[in-house]
Image 1 (cartoon, one colour):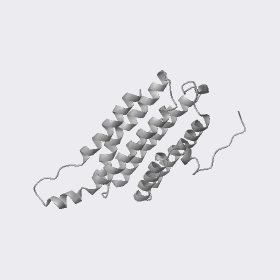
Image 2 (image 1 turned 180 degrees about the vertical axis):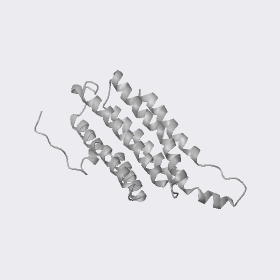
Image 3 (image 1 turned 90 degrees about the horizontal axis):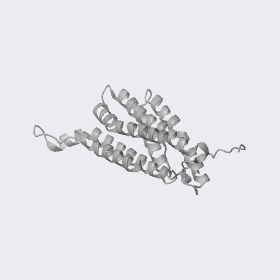
Image 4 (image 1 turned 30 degrees about the vertical axis):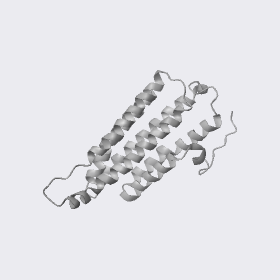
Length: 201
């Protein structure tokens, strides 16, 4: 399952560069290259995002040691959402700075909301049911810290979608902040937000 997922991440991150076109001969080359700045920006952002998703996927599977049919379905759903990123990146690059920019940003944000939901479903399923899919010697504190970090994803991306109606720039900035947040190892990220405490066992 990890090998298949690595392949999907590799293909998705490679497809991003196809949005950057080689300029023709009709006008000044430097001018044409500069005009493609939305494509460069979208490529860099999405490359970083997919790379961070790949890092997080590997972090999860340092704790997950077994799989079952439902686990495969959740992972396949996650890979489906990853495959959408090259399209939403091209959409953003084509429409940023134009009348359709807001719609493009909303679609772009929505793709990451979908990924956040599937990441949560995958992890929560693996960590639930008495943790039967986790390694026998798993550190339960690390499991809880991953859960805490992932709790913020769906809500934050939903806020980014709503904010796109007010400010496209602010919406994209939230995406960047979230990318950096999820790039942080969970044991560090958990120190930046209030830890949840429960008296139930």
